[in-house]
Image (cartoon, rainbow over all chains, first blue to last red; front, top):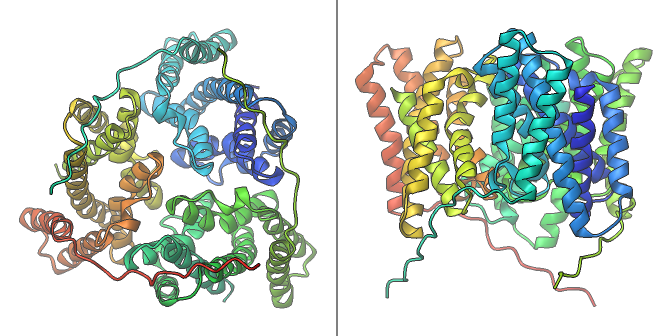
Length: 204
Length: 204
Length: 204
């Protein structure tokens, strides 16, 4: 269920980035599939699960294609597309962070490994999307992006250790990652930037 | 034999992209090697074959370097370079799609896994080439690119299931993928693009 | 020790690229971590070591974060930042080339495999850094980059075969790779570039 939400949300975000970049329908579908399934493929490679389970999961692929077609049919203003990309991306970030942390723990890698595999899975699909679309990944340019995912993965690992992890905890954690990310977007939470560099005068 | 064709064709395409971007001879050779061997490395990682066989295959590396040097010596007009890139890329696409599907089946992963590993291998080298050269991957921007590879991989899997896969079938399939891709290029087969987005008026 | 030097040097180079691109402090830290640990993750995936050891190595992560913060605090002229990026990158290149070759040999893959895994690890972190920052990787555009790493890996493999590999040999090899790279930068060693392509006249 949780993974389905992540797949759908990331496929929508990937498809919409394709729309924004004016790719054709095939390019949009490929970008939707890469965004939705890429993070999980990286997760399985890191955990040594080969072939990656996402490559045999027809329901996930069908979901990605449907989401890509929905994005393709999407019409509206550039600004609306940008907002929907950010919202869908935030939902995928939350869903994949918690789900990948759980999968890593189930495969016998709790603690720091689960937390990092979770974070990398959550940000991986979006990074692939942006790199393939010729953009700098959101995680590098947008304030407060990787941090909510990292904290969500840490909280998941902690809940499992304390034995209080259940369906309610799971959805609360997903909602928290999503919520913090959306609040950061809404209120433009700023983190410090480096001082502006001076440009050298050319020597004469 | 088949893999050699793919390695040579993709190395030529990688080298020519380097020529087009005016990289020096080392950059051209690195890009030729990445394009020719990158797809196979991804294939082996997906199938759990480590270290990837391409990293121990000296004949493939020598072939890539020779192809890279041929590309480096290539002179002519930008338009001719662009055409040769597209042709070499189409040959590599066909060769790798069929060969990687067969390798996946031989390693005990027929069906959907073989088809997807084949498609990813076929488009992977070219994606790496374009990303490293600072271009948006062909698969996202060029009409009818991933589709011939996908159908070629499906046909290969089907032939193996029906027990009719032999050398004639193999080369027919490679020629079909190559032919469909070249026809798509020649006749500018178009697939739908998303509606143009309206740009919002700035609020005052 | 050697790996620590590579992690620190590459994290500095990653952080400074982030400074140059005006990422915020989180983006700078992510880019420092990716540059410092990315090459080693690729190395472990190629050798079939899962989960990659870098993901469980808290001291390396702490080193990367500290180096990223140092880069963030760095102020000065653009030209000085560029120079420091190149120097830190050369140090990382040397350290990772030798260290990854040794790790591959220890895991039972001497010879061509060790040499290629070493070279890929050495150039991998910097390639990730540049791709994620929206730049064309140094290895493709800068003269004499991959070559010193390749020769350093070959020399390491040779020393191990001859039984003359010790601490002195190790640091000499690192210093050689670093030194050749810095000399190439200092004296602008040029390798041939392809002939300039003629642009076709538009048909009328």
